[in-house]
Image (tube, rainbow, N blue to C red; front, side, top):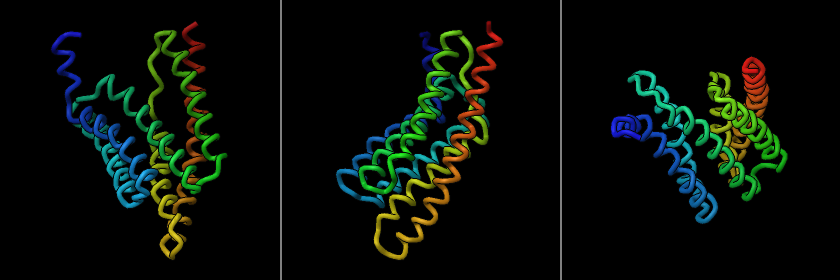
Length: 190
């Protein structure tokens, strides 16, 4: 890799993406080891904000990169899986939620590998795909807060499951859409 190519990776959007990745183990530590739900939720909020800003800045400043194109959705998936595991371990969600979301991601991972094997471009994240992820990322902090046995825990439960159900529906819908795009690309490449 040339020096210029290495330097092109050092951008504000890529730094935000890297910072967001560091939030995953921090979130797990705060939520599981310390049960410091406020700090864990703040970590998720910062992760969500950097997810939004890294893409906005990359497009606005012309700093889109292959690293960002691949790392951004991968980190989104890791946040979702980590949060699902935390929520399950803390008895905030049932196992079926994890199964549905992980199976969707595994199917798309196989589709992505098939595209890569044929030297085809990766799936492009759509607005609805981002909306699905944002709904889930908004739901998770509420579901964590819902563990509190008081009025705001009840309110958080209502908001959390409202965002979660909408997010799950969108996540599955976009999964079918992405898979259809992958299949179409693979068929055209024959």
